[in-house]
Image (cartoon, rainbow, N blue to C red; front, side):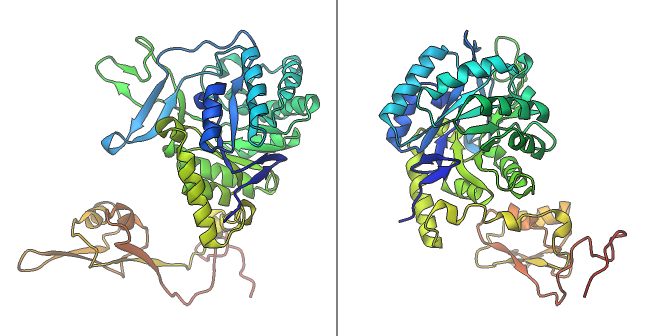
Length: 426
């Protein structure tokens, strides 16, 4: 049986699944229920100075797919709206009752050293295992000079991180904002400030949809709304890319990463770990389906690891990083061609329509005398773009088959079609 336990920058946890700092970790009642369900750790919802933040109503909205499947989730909720004293007392008790679970405390304070110096000893006294600096919240708090307003300025990231390392012995995890051009810049700044790890991504600025009768966005607060933080399965591709960018950056490639963003099952978690994450944080999936989803996550990950011969998380952590590169280093001589399994094909024609209208006209539509349809790939025209495979509703009906080109590896920096190509050394 695979060992799911982790040691993340000195923070031990029975499994890599942590609840992210959010409504599910706002109070002891929720956190205890999560630990009873089997979560390996939590990041307690962000604490700040007293008096606590005041939230509005309503707070959430969603971007829906077919049959009201929630693809993306938007929220305009702020940090904890409960007093600092109540939160600290509850954190202390929960950690005492659950000593084997990871307890990380999220913090957000003004860009002044004194508030950080004051709160950090109080957090440390709870017995918490680490702190997470919330430099990512994109709504409400940036207007007050906190959250993403800090995370978007690398100098601020480095400065506040250094303050925290000065005033606490706990591991410091810096939570990064995705609302930035290049996530590597704040990650490098966090490392320069002494960060023990980074976590990402926080939520993305968004408006999910508009009430066209009232002409107001959701979530509506009376007759007005605002941009909020977008999360859920829809942000997973963005999160994976940003995790990979930090994992393969020469300046930060050894920096521990806690992966966040659209993780809803064991496979999502495995992908984040393969791209560099040492732990994974979940929020939206738990809010939509409850805490017991962690049972399937742990079981699925363990079974998959056993099938692959991975004894522990470290055995496959970062394993996909060396295979992630810049476009210019991809093999220009590699070629695939689509192939349609006629036994699986349901003759819906979606591949044909997509290719004919918007791609390379490389699928032929044939109709026999009885009116029966058949679709075949025109190999000489196929460029291997994958569009037909993506649009096909039948799994594994269309596959992309590698072709033997007889040519050696050649990337764009070497390609003679590139006006700035480099000489190929024999």
